[in-house]
Image 1 (cartoon, rainbow, N blue to C red):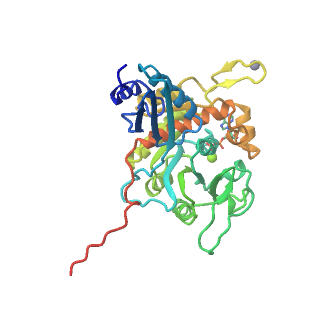
Image 2 (cartoon, rainbow, N blue to C red):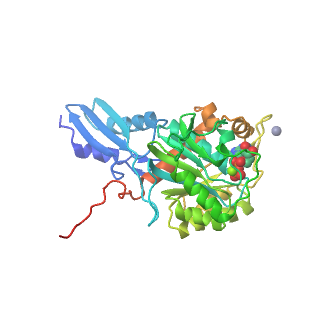
Image 3 (cartoon, protein in one colour):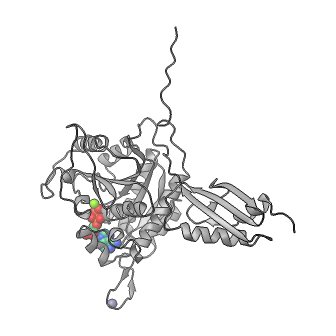
Amino acid sequence: MADISQQQIETVLKQYIDPYLQKDLISAKAVKNIQIENTTVTVDITLGFPSQGYNDTLSQQIKAKIGTVDGVSMVNVNISNKIVAHAVQKGVDPIKGVKNIVAVASGKGGVGKSTTAINLALALSAEGANVGILDADMYGPSQPRMLGISQQPESKDGKTLEPVKNYGIQSMSIGYLVEEETPMIWRGPMVTQALEQLLKDTNWHELDYLIVDLPPGTGDTQLTLAQKIPVSGAVIITTPQDIALIDAIKGLKMFEKVSVPILGVIENMSIYICSKCGHEEHIFGEGGGLRMAQEKDVDFLGALPLDISIRKNADEGHPSVQVDPEGRIAQIYREIARRVSAKLSLQAKEYTAKFPTIKVENN
Ligand SMILES: Nc1ncnc2c1ncn2[C@@H]1O[C@H](COP(=O)(O)OP(=O)(O)O)[C@@H](O)[C@H]1O
Ligand SMILES: [Mg+2]
Ligand SMILES: [Zn+2]
């Protein structure tokens, strides 16, 4: 029997298209090592996104592919994850302790942006990443309630704030500092200034991802934020109805204007499933998010149903992904989390943070 060759293994590996990277693992440079010892093949894979809910499936797929090669009796697959920092807009400095900021935005309020943002954060965490969330909706902070937090952040030095930790993620919100009922009468420049401070003066600890729940809309304030916050990628939330879609497109254009890559579109309240009889209804129209993504040539990341449990869990301070991380709803958010982070992993890397500034002195 002829020896198994590296070439043979690579050829079959190339047949598996990773659903998140949307390319094969060799082209994605995720295969770090292939070791062939007699009839045993060992493959080391390193993914640039968190993948705990996907590792078993991936491992099975790889084993099945390599198993088709003549003479292979055993396949070992080692999967690891390495999340790196990705490039931000030119001229803005990355935030200390944060590898990637992902902005969650919507063209208008009430589409479920905050609910999606927190569940996405928890989903990335469930997949194995180190995650934080910044509630940037200064007018209507909702993260404290959804995270079930009523305490105030600590300050160790009287200058900076410690993020508040719950459910394994770090968070900061203006809602921790003012009463939820107090109406905030901010004017544009105040919002951006206060927010920049909240972002920069928080001691984020080694975050792979910081999810920023932006204020709804596409006005001057939002544009300024999109310019000033060092964002690696943006996710747009929309409902399927036309009016929300029109605003979502405005959001998309806003990020394009400031050269922030769009990671994709999430359709929320996509379909209503009656909790009594299980029949399905497209209350806000059908497939609008998908059509919009196709027309604007961005990824469609997934759709969440209009489901009473999503609202109830969030209102009670236990978002769906936290309360039931293996449940049906959580799986949708986790699938989206893998798509978002895999998409981000294909973006250009950030180098500025890695190297110290080199001073050239002439004497
Ligand atoms: N998929 C969903 N199914 C049911 N209720 C939802 C869903 N997404 C959000 N909600 C509810 O809709 C309301 C608005 O959501 P929220 O996240 O606060 O929106 P936004 O931040 O865009 O203003 C909240 O009461 C929330 O619990
Ligand atoms: Mg909100
Ligand atoms: Zn019914």
